[in-house]
Image 1 (cartoon, rainbow, N blue to C red):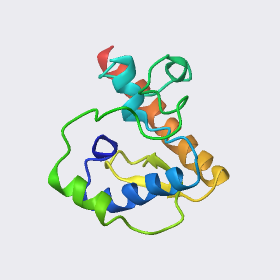
Image 2: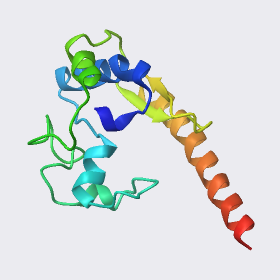
Image 3: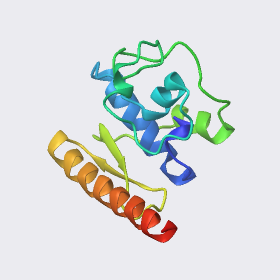
Length: 134
């Protein structure tokens, strides 16, 4: 959970989101566990091809918690899980402003809109970086 956000203030929200997914038997679909499974620690995007990797840490393919931690959690992260925020969120996506915050959603339609905004902003950022290198 800690690798999902650099924003301490989101910890309890994210913990609640994962608790909601576990309670509903929805795969966690946690990008950090997938990055850990692929060992591509510089990945900016998780691609559909990454989601096919055969690993117990692939939380897109495997339901429930992965077999172990992917990093050493901070105390505040453990506290956030023990005192998670109760809400209805089951999806999250990085905000398109690259602030490190997330947009949270209760349904797939809302999540897909959030994801499209982020992907568009990321594509523009990558194109901008390529133009500056020319």
